[in-house]
Image (spheres, rainbow, N blue to C red):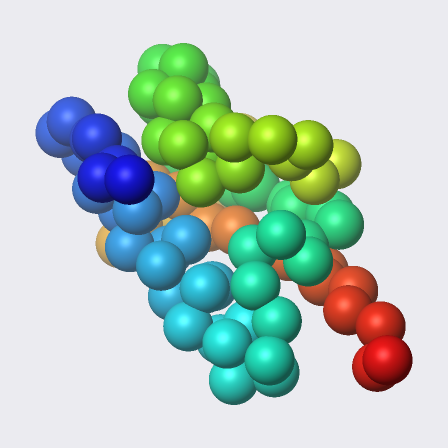
Length: 88
């Protein structure tokens, strides 16, 4: 489906799309993500970010931690993920 996003949260879409591309290089997908660490620059971005995140992880989302980070300068969101895919 199409990802719906408003305003500044296009950054979240870009970051998650980059994660998808990186996972693909390892023959993995977003469904293989088991943990996500999220840094947000603004507390007010959380509801919108959460909506975007939910569109990418609609079923059984990975465990997630989210914190504010005022040191983010050029971006509003940063995401680090851990993915697990058996080699079978």
